[in-house]
Each structure stands twice: as C-alpha cells, then as structure tokens.
Length: 80
Image (cartoon, rainbow, N blue to C red; front, top):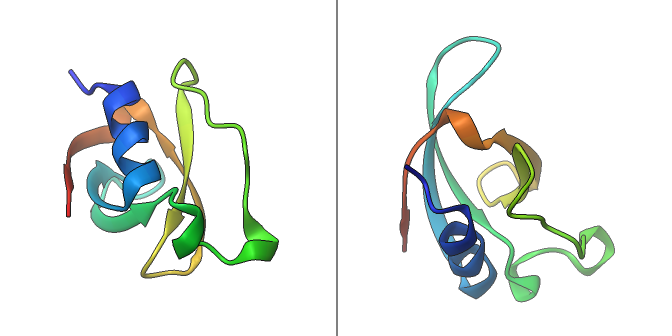
C-alpha cells in the first residue's frame, strides 16, 4: 500500500522517482517528479495537494509539465 502522505512529503523536499501504470496504454512509466518550489517554474506552481484525493498532481522533471497520477496506479516510488 502506498503512503500518499509520505510520498507528498518527499515530493515537497526534492526529487522522487515514481513508477506507475499509465491508464490509457497500460505502459509502465518511471517519472522523476517533484513538488519542491525551487524545482518548479515560478509561474507554474500550485499550492494545494491533498493526500485524500484519488489523484495527485506532480511536476514531471523530464517532461517539464504537470502530470496527474492516479494513486491506485502507483507501483512504487523512491526519494532520490
């Protein structure tokens, strides 16, 4: 079981590698992500991330864009 609170805390501290299954293709995606303000463009920040939501918004460091990940599709994650 994924601890969403712990995941969000680590995302706010720095880079987290999230492995999840894409809903549309079923492909496994490994994505470097963050919620650390210093790693996100200042004109693109969001302020409210809820650990009780079915999805979480993360900044994808490799795509340089916001990505919405369904919590139930997360296989594993690791702080970098």
